[in-house]
Length: 386
Image (cartoon, rainbow, N blue to C red; front, side):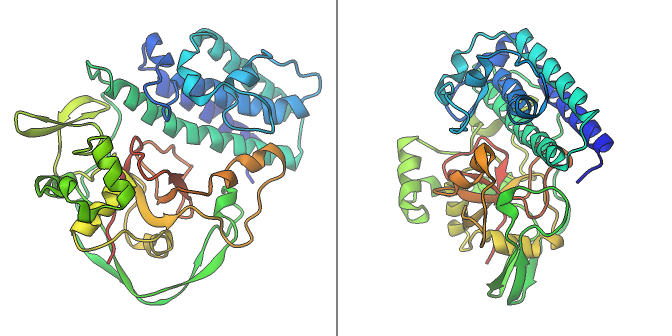
């Protein structure tokens, strides 16, 4: 647990970072919701603020006056224990409250947290504040990827920022890391912050395997496309094959074939695909099919964690072959915070690592991200195993 002064600085740094992400936006960009999985930027700014108000200020700050009684309904995401909320698909209908009022809400709650923690030394409150900080960091990643989806589906394909740094080319030599069979410790085991889904450190036995020290590149994935692999049913799960055909999937998200060349939408606008950069914005279905095409497979999350010290990671969320399940002796938190991770442990695949959109001081080698297998608006890629 961080000392309170450091924790408050971390809090303020995180609050500022969310607003910095939104600086390139026009006011009209804040409300757009192209699909149900993408939330408007204004909603993210309000929801992360509501989290601090709902779980810290309202129950613990004596005499605290709620900013707006309607905001719990507007900015609650999925916490059944907290009460009613706007249906997720309707977040784009929230032309009100205004962007200015949401920013006023952020300032009000930030000042409330500063006032509370200038007098409180309760360890339990510090833990809540640290959870709230990392919750906002999770939403910063979602905020960036949602903004990219919003602008990437605008017919003009406008640039978000010319300073956002995408994943660089991996210049090290391709190699296969040989891992001997053995028993490995999996899960978080330190006093540093982690989520409850990383807890329950346990042993796993792994058979011998090899794992690539490099991510699959755009050029390598282009070979998969040009080999007609999106038309080969034998490479896909049945559900994946249905998805490909029903959604008419022919390439990764944001890819466009223009006069025989592949282009893709980036945060800098429409650019030619760089063959040497790691592939991104692919679904688990596509990652699995590519591995099948190569005669290989995806690593399990345990294989990934056991080998992670031998390769660079953190610039692409990496699909694994593991279903998102609880570790042994997993325990949900009491109350509404128990809804944070546990209730999503079904029908999802685990991703490991992090991405260029993941904020600093947030990811670690035990971090377990999770998404449904068809989703690809995050910066998702793959690493092969055999």
